[in-house]
Amino acid sequence: MDSIANKSAVLLMTLMVVAGAVAGQPATGPVPVLAPAQNQVPGDGVRRITPAEVRAALDNGEAIIVDVRSEVGYEAGHVKGAWLIPFSDLTSRISELPRDKMIITYCS
Image 1 (cartoon, rainbow, N blue to C red):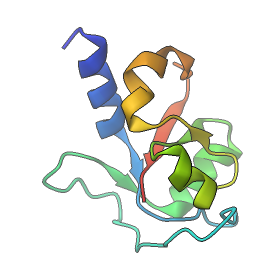
Image 2 (image 1 turned 180 degrees about the horizontal axis):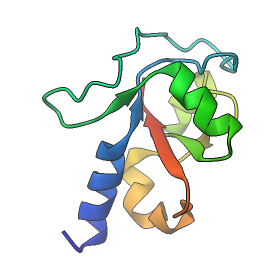
Image 3 (image 1 turned 135 degrees about the vertical axis):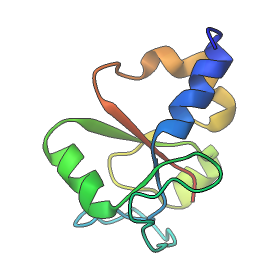
């Protein structure tokens, strides 16, 4: 588990937002909104958090949001303030992510 590829996989599996917009923070375009998963860890091992949990973490300066879709998807609409780091680039750009913050990723 010491390779960068494995670390990026663990990073992506740590937290994921499945809501298209963060509570109180509109998306910058048409982004589908899915029901939050209530902090459950489904069979894929990815913890889901609610929009309220995202908002609290952002308001407290404890987190950043990373959109791991393509640039085309990002330009079509994204959560305001989200960083664009496409999944295909994540391994080579992992050093850009802060080590002292929660990394919240989304792809829908």
